[in-house]
Length: 113
Image 1 (cartoon, rainbow, N blue to C red):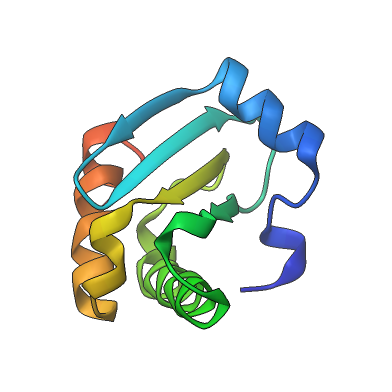
Image 2 (spheres, one colour):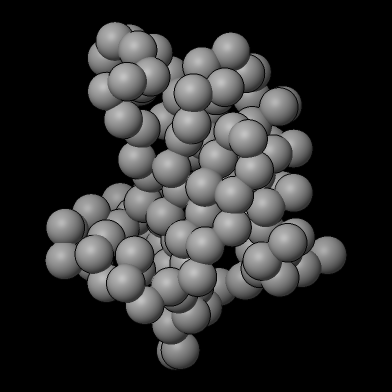
């Protein structure tokens, strides 16, 4: 995923947390806010220190980015998303992340077929 498609700044994260809506399942939490006139969706990923060492946290982030890459054509372009991993995410593989993410995106209405 290109860097210009990522939410990086703390101010942007805080704005999405305050203004956005959230949905969750056992593995992931999604916060999102609609942004008009945006060509591509942007994503911020957060994995807390309680989920393991740095290797595990980076692996979870890679799995989430890969899942997003596979689902990219189906996600609405005018949205900023924050994805937060929960404890059960430590034992998931890429396919499970993809299914979990797809489930949440469908619930939020951001997934278009």
